[in-house]
Amino acid sequence: MAYTTIDKPTDYFNTKLYTGNGSTQSITGVGFQPDWTWIKSRSEAVAHVVFDSVRGAGGNKELTPNETYAEGANSTLNYGFLSSFNSDGFSVSQGTSSPNQADYVNKSSQTYVSWNWLAGTSFSNDASATSIGSIDSSGSVNETAGFSICTYTGISSAGTIKHGLSTVPSMIIWKNRSASNGWIVYHHKNTSAPETDYLELHATNATNDLNTIMNDTAPTSSVFSIGTEGAVGGGNTNNFVAYIFSERKGYSKFGSYTGNGNADGAFVYTGFKPAFILVKGTSVTSNWTLLDNKRNTFNVVNAQLQADLSNAESSSNSVDFTAQGFKVRNQYDSLGSSGNTYIYMAFAESPFVSSKGIPTTAR
Image 1 (cartoon, rainbow, N blue to C red):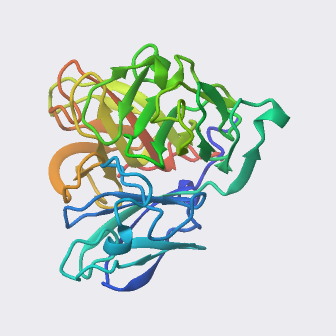
Image 2 (cartoon, rainbow, N blue to C red):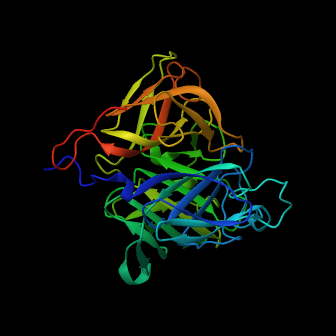
């Protein structure tokens, strides 16, 4: 069997950098029409914003990972928004506020990073007709890349929801679109019983334990479970979105490691040369650290953004990207303090070995 089925990871995930022009512009070079786009100003302290093709583009469709606002409540009509998903990227528009004010996506001369994922195949599930789950769902899925976007409406009790993939999810990120609830994160390496625990994308908290998040039930190859916690959909009839990931060898990895408190830190094997990693301490209060191969084209990879903060980009010794994974170069709580556990989400620049048996090269 081939090592991987994905020889060109940039067909499914790609980071695109650009500079704002203070008006409208089309950002090209992504390589595909994205279905989930996450944008952050590198040069200015403004909110992260995410848009997806299932909910649609526009100035009332933003969600802000570092904040708890409901969909559209953070006023990107004033502060800029993604206006359309295009065949090779997306378009952005500056908001209606003064040009001297902050802009989330297109302020003149400000620099931005966008992280883009491909889903692409629509799905819809009538739970009563299919007997898959107990709550209707719809969305977009990419089975090859192990990624789906799932939307649904909450109910007054716990339930199960079809996620669109045919494999067990490794990570799920939820947001209540209708209310100011936090961002809930399930990760399959978060403690020995991850279905009982959760993290919050907008916060620095270590792992929390609450049985009303996933009803203490692990996801399966067809459904995920929600309890009666309003942030995920039980106990109310709000609208929700979930971003769902399943590992694909040579392309994505959702794992964990233990820090050693040393600049010569842990080596984390992913099976590919990373293009992107998101790291969070589960046993320690810490930020969610975002690193990629476009903001740093050589080691050390140290251009940091934090998913839970609006801060501009900063530099700190962080990690080396290698042909097989990443090497931690930071001994602090954000990435590598001694004895503490960290979870990560990683996507590939290139697999360690291609489907034809060709090994990748180091940076």
